[in-house]
Image (tube, rainbow, N blue to C red; front, side, top):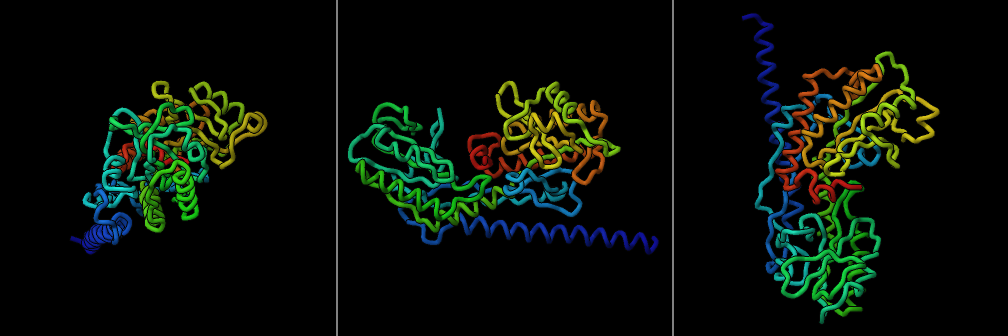
Length: 393
């Protein structure tokens, strides 16, 4: 055996050992993050215990395949970055399931009511929302909390009502009829605009307190610092799972693509130009956006710009957390991207301009599958109401 062969074997062994050590370090780091958020040191002993959804993400590697992953900040800016290779995806960390926290409500009984899963419609989600319940002295109509229904706090706010003899919480709107003996105000802890801030939470508590005094009703204010810390950690963990996949179509000779030509091809493929400045493909069965087509120059498409100018390329985007079946949607997007590249006389490339062959596309598909599995293992079903809330603007 030559010295070169021995050196290559030794280098391979060192590489494997290095990957193992790196993965162990990442696991300890994420475990500490989860423990810090979901195991408050001074949680009330009387509060209802509840299993917290634990989240995991795909870590980035040095030799990332041509997949575009967007963090919360990048999604807002319409930018993309490379995500991990297959080895990193296989080594993603699965946190323990025995983490608990207390739900910020009046009593243990009320907490159990809020946390109890009830089929048949939307329900409060204590795992991703700060929930405060109000218990009026006597049943009151939905109009009694009208000020809360119209409150603008910078994060989505949902209201639910409870009626005697009915185990389910009912969404409360300005059009709700009948009276309720209990209300639940639910403020989302994090979305793609970032975590719930202390100022937002304090405003939320003030709104609820003012309503409680007018009903009148009893309520228990949440621990502001604890909820803010929980929001920040939830945001960080969701950022690890916030993955978008991008496939770019460019002309091989760097020639521009005429806007009029692009619009005709896109609309023929089933896209429509959305107000946000990108083309969107809507699934006919679900009515949801399956994937989108945006300008590679980070400039929005408009009817005028498409008529008067050209672009250097376009990017097909797949928003993994918001899709019920991300792998199937990727397969459809891949075919659409290939057809558009052929029609425009372009080629399919990654973020670095490298051509994407079938082997590279297969790796990207595996990454989509891994990202969807990571979401499910974190108790966030892709395309679910929870996923749409956490990964919405």
